[in-house]
Length: 353
Image (cartoon, rainbow, N blue to C red; front, side):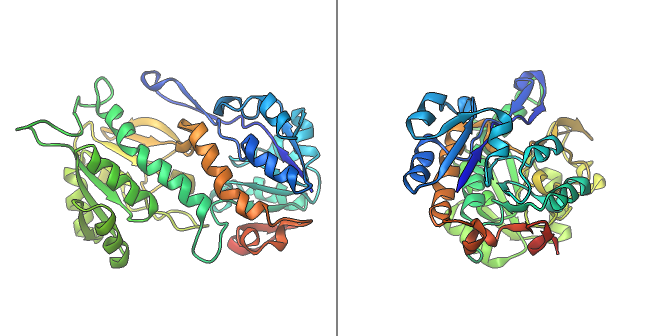
């Protein structure tokens, strides 16, 4: 088959103290991943510069057997186009009719016009966030693990002056550490709990499932776990220095757990890391970006692993390849890929039905 690997161009403005802009630098396949597909008889068309932000030069892709092409060709020549971020309408226009598009699509919260444009073109749309076998979603898990591990370094920066109150996560002897409340004990929540504990913070982990909290207790001993109720949510949010939204329902909008009234009770200068913003966010005040509202610094980046594009690209390739190796002449014949389908040849299915 013909695979297209375009360069990502999405970016998000952030406060100047944090660098002014976050660009999506991840790429779905490293040169080694391309080499494996080429060895199986596939052709891979890579847009020039696709891997440069992740540290993979064009020459490395050429050596792996890829053909370097223009942006139009990367989209237009691929029977299967491997993106990272959800495409724009302009990018959809470059795709060939009936192509298969793969990426972190999150179509449950996408603009209606984008979904309709995909359907009109007869595309098959496969979301990395839904791919896998049964409940296992290895691509999503890898990105969640990265985001969770990054949580303390992000929160630590936002608690520093001048953006924050000038607080050290770990505290000091005689000075208590920051209180971190994590909503959701899935992969991301557990990874964040381990990382915050390692940074010396006090960690509280809430979830609606006792089994998830039991697993979290084993993975992150030292974290205080509790079943989430409205009264507990109100009490824990009120004393949190850092509040982490790690609640997600695959293929659906994230539940809104935090009202404006609830967030208004947080300490001034506290931080909300809403890692569910890809799926709409867990707070009424959440929207893509980094900003302050109600005295709370909101970190709502929909592409957190893009901050470490090299590591994230390696993780993407490692988790995608086992499924791509099974592709012969139609990716929809691979059950794990079909499980991730939002659209099948333009027809809504799966999680859009």
